Image (cartoon, rainbow over all chains, first blue to last red):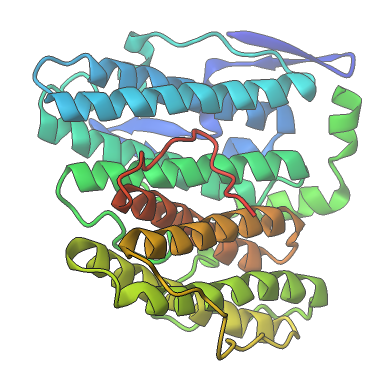
Length: 194
Length: 186
């Protein structure tokens, strides 16, 4: 148990699994797998916290990639930019969560991000780092896409959509850095990696 | 505040959540640039009108890219042509959705009164402004949509529009992703 949230006099006891389950990034067989929606179908506070944890994990992962010696300077700069964006997205979600009555979860460690994203520890060169970043962005968009249909609060839907738009831009820039077509399709819903 | 939040959990929301959780209603409604959209089986004039608002801007974007194409060369021209094709795919996706929802899709205008272009950057600035309008319009519309297919289509389109915005901005020599929260600009 890593968090207890007072909500309307009751206390929501949330396990780590529940928190991570919503936006759910699951480690499976050494690769990244994403399952949208399940925990998002729970209470809205769970959804907010799941989203915040996901953004924080992404930020920590990008900060780690930005510090890898084997990764070229341009890619490290890109990862630094993306880390900053993920932090800001987490902060925006935290602000909305606090407005809605939930507490911010603690910032995760690099070790926690490496457990969640199995490819992170081994991404020590440009190619593998960009490939992982592409998987992360696709997974994040996919997770939010699976969740957005369950949300009805206008502010939350607007914010999640705006975050997805930023992540879509990240994906284009990461693909461009990897010398791939940055916009291969006219419709973007992210995708599950595995 | 939590009461306010809880107050937002309506019966409709629970039903929507239940439907979405069973394998992803949104995913089923995910747009395809090639496939015929599934019928919505629902007349929804409000959603039709909302989608028609963004369709009108999509038409304007297609016309704008055609307008600027002649002023561009090399990579910028290739980018504009590719984006124009994707905008056309968006319009092709929205039009039958609006019909299915009982609306009447707004046709493209013959003339949008675009200005003469002094240089390539003026053209990129024009379409950049329209991409900003598109992102803002979709973000305004998406929370109001109640039909899940309509919402799915809109979400999968606005993410692509945000990518267009980044690449057009980059083509102008500006930072492509200056914002962490991308809301566009009306």
